[in-house]
Amino acid sequence: MKKRLKDILACPTCRSALTEGHRLTCLACGATFEERHGVPVLLDEESRREIDKFYGGRPQQEDADRQRKQTASRLEHWLTHPPSRKIGDKTVPNLKKLWSLLKERESDPLVLTVGKIKSRINRENSDDDADVRALEAVSVRLDIKAGPGVAVVGDGHKLPFLDNSFDAAIGLTTVKHLRNPFTFAVRASDGHIHINDVGQSAWEEINLGVAGANYGWPSTEGPTNAAGITGPLFAFDHSSGADNVAGFFSGCSVVGGAFYPDAGPFPQAYRGSYYFTDYCTPVVGRLDLANGNVAYAFGSVPGSPVGMTVTSDGALLVLTRSAVVRFTAP
Ligand SMILES: [Zn+2]
Image (cartoon, rainbow, N blue to C red; front, side, top):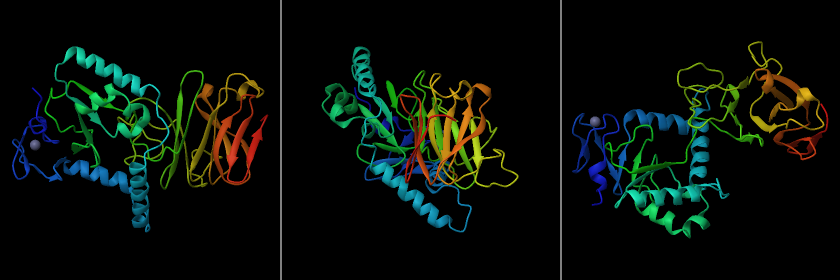
């Protein structure tokens, strides 16, 4: 028999069952939760504060209000205009495989999906696919904001469901607490990922992409040893003063990036390195992966860089707002 949604809801703070009434009330701690348009909103105070910090960034300056509005409107746009390109050719096959396993094992499966899975996969493929539709039909969708198909508003860190409520869970979010991962690069030989995370007021980061990693924003920005946080491989700050640990490098918005392959016209010492630059400081940097991620200045470009790639013949191309600069040698 299909479980009723109200029978599996739990308090996000203490994970006890909720009573059903005018408001949803926790039987153990007494916390109460509202429903909006029939959708339970199971966010506790801590989650509400975290969401507010995330949407608003870290206000530090007199223009904090303006910044908060800008960040909120950027995120609103991003959330309501999901990327149109297909993300991950394997998503639909994986969902089909999950559905076939579930059908074998459960007569009446119930699945938890966290986040807007549907908006992140190829709509044309998935809408035509009977297995994906069947999987969606038995899914309870949790998100931190209401929207089409969202059954429960809640925080993925504090799943508001009783234990053993679901037969499977689907989540596409594999890294968290980046601030603005504007550009990233994947090393073709092995899938190693570098994420360029644009900072707010102090630090620009290059992070190693690791499944499940927590990069700390907005609790941390720049180098950190905080427990549970994956610090950057390399960071440079916004000031060129003496405190600039990157030495030669400061900027306002990290841009990149490209892995140079192990072969090509660049001298041996320059191969295998990761190249990056900055929108405000058009110095091209080189991160030496073979020697502890030490950074070196590599070259410079006129104007404001926005992207970078390595061509099949081994040249490093830097796209600026006004030109394409081609480096065929250091
Ligand atoms: Zn409770």
